Length: 111
Image (cartoon, rainbow, N blue to C red; front, side, top):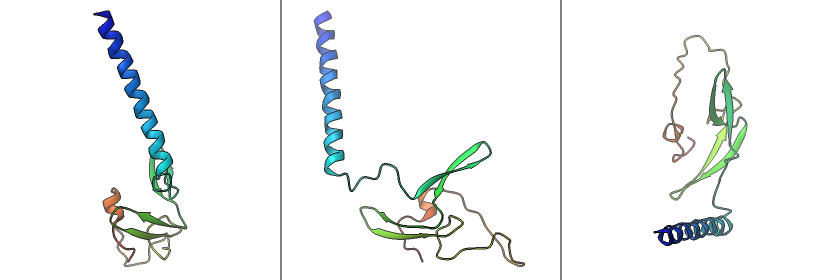
């Protein structure tokens, strides 16, 4: 029984080393295609909450398997070519939409 457990543990150790080696090889081979920590995202802290948002005044390309899209981020951190005043003009309706990458529109053109 003990030799069976020893062989299982040593086999598991070899398997773990193989996985680590495979991870290393993939990171070396595809280092330009893998984005581990996006440079266009940042943390924003609001009291006890932390959210991730787009970096204000930035421009970047978002690449996916289907397309490559240019993003323009304004001074307020929104995906838009122009800035908006913080004070709302009279007669203007503003709507806040909170969501994920589908809400952000990562797969669609800027316009």
